[in-house]
Length: 538
Image (tube, rainbow, N blue to C red; front, side, top):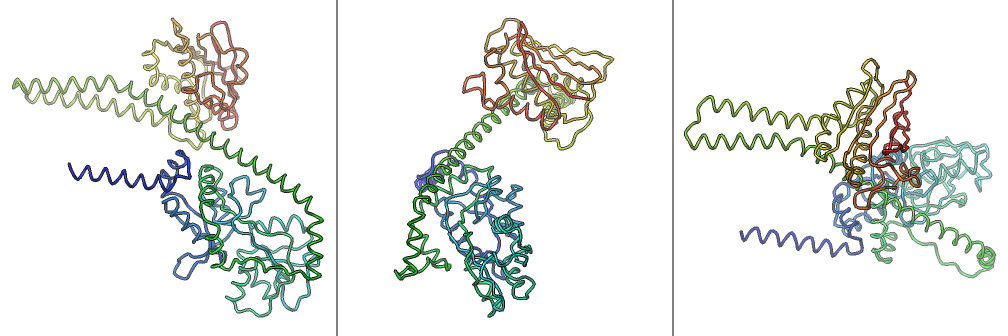
């Protein structure tokens, strides 16, 4: 007992230390990072001196040191996933195979699947040519070849702004440098630290910097857009790192600031130019500030959507568990009576071979019934990738056999109408269809109970008019108010109170029907209640 008390105190003390270290996060953010602390994957590839992979496979570099600091701040351990090329890394991020891109440039195309923190590294790109070439700018390379890393932000920028240049895609910047050395191409564009690393590695003496280009890198940590919480947590954590600590890290890996400018004649010309563009630049900053504000608002909205989806999923799970619990109640009761009877017979000395056989057969029957209930629910709710032919009539009957007892418990009668001589076969997603029907039936049940209708009725009708298959679901709950009936398929709109409704059920049903199942759904009122109409073309 004393050992248990010590263990509990130890756990509480560790939680206190973690909570103390994460006091810059909200309670929700702290819970999120604790739930996923060992499952976050960072995609990396060889980008000197951000990430360098040694011969024994060990990773080092600016980004690795930075993530080590973040790990200590959050008390977590990241998982590194190494890719042989930048393009492979970006494709993995796009396909949700990794959670974080170690450092990346923000581009329009990447904003579709990534969130970005504030800028961590600002780097200048240089035009690198062979010493024998006399190119001084990108404009002079019209009709000539430039090697550029496939999938990079630089590739996206250069191809858009310099369509007259012939671009040769490479797997890496190292390969681009080699192509310039071998005169396969006339030039490449690369950030200075990386260029220095590769030139030294290859022991090259005949490559020079031709000029700067107008496109610099402003690198940030990028997070998968499916994880808005992670982006917020990383942004907050980066703000906890002291500026001098970050500057020391940059210096360690060769990311030093430009030398101080002395006021010679040329510098004065530059200063005059700077003053000439100050006002437009301030306007630009104002615009960027508004843009960043919008991005923050979008992230907050995304987080809210995640919370709503979670609540919707929990609500759906609660309903499924309620159905299973109701189906299990009778066999559990029977099993309890069998056990009590067996104990009673044992005490009276009446246990014989026949009594044991009776107990064995009947208890097994009750357990098999409970097992069948689980299997039925698993069959209805498992994921389905391909369309299959199924009978709407048979599917609805199977569904009702599972859920109808729960409705009967609430004194709700479900009536199912169809014509025996009609064919109700459909080539579609059976499980998606059943989940949509369950969602509509549950909405009808909630409306009947909320309004305390005396004779609670739900009607399901199948129709086949040779062109379409139609499913009608009606109730006698009084209908949906006319001022909101047009909004019931909108996201986050709910007629239920905030505690019981997320406003996602009908919205998701409509999206699935129209975008995955090639169907339609609408709703109207009659004098008794609401009528939901689902249509599938043949």
